Image (cartoon, rainbow, N blue to C red; front, side, top):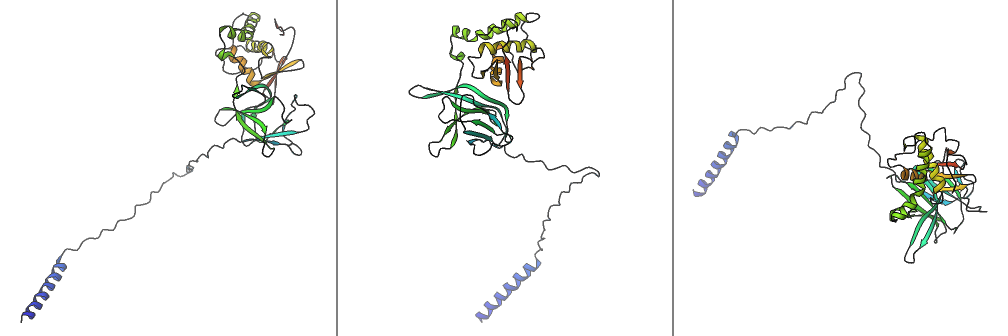
Length: 305
């Protein structure tokens, strides 16, 4: 009897549970809808705007040097190194990207016992721009003193120098970055030395002013500007590595001409065009950033030193 009562109670509890579940309010299931796509409607007749271009990273400049084997490329630039005689060997310098202010330089070395210092003797050749499609070829002689180096402005705007040398491992040519000591002593000179160093500049400015129409300092006047630089070049040519003699005229390279203008004119910005009145004695070489400055004996009070 007791067992039957227990079974009845269990059945009753089961029925009550079913009723309660059945009477509970059904839970509403909310289905999240996918977001509606955004559609860009372009007015008729108007072309859609192109997607913005992603700029490619700037290419690093790589300048290389090697011995020239066989014939030089047709479009090469040639520098017949006047200090190297009877040499049949040549080198070729190439770049993977355009570089500006390219220079082929004669480099000297000073030995101080505890270290060495490189200094520029002369600029042998220069270009406003050195490009991949115009390789640079020069005569070469191993162990020539002074040595040879190149200089150029890289893609970051920094002017850099590299010594050309022969590797002791495999005999190939290599470029080693160096620093050139300044040729001028103005930065460390005392007052007397500074005055003597600047004497050619003072002398040239005074002569150009005395021979101008109104006798004034006129750096924006092209004739006064180039008259002054002409006199500085012929008076300063033995002090600057960017100037060299070539018969009856001087070869003055671009960076040297800039140095003269910076020394002479306080507000100097850039070289002015050579006026017609002086273009017979100051002649710019088209493809190369050099000027031929001719010696003459009647250009005002010009005197050769």
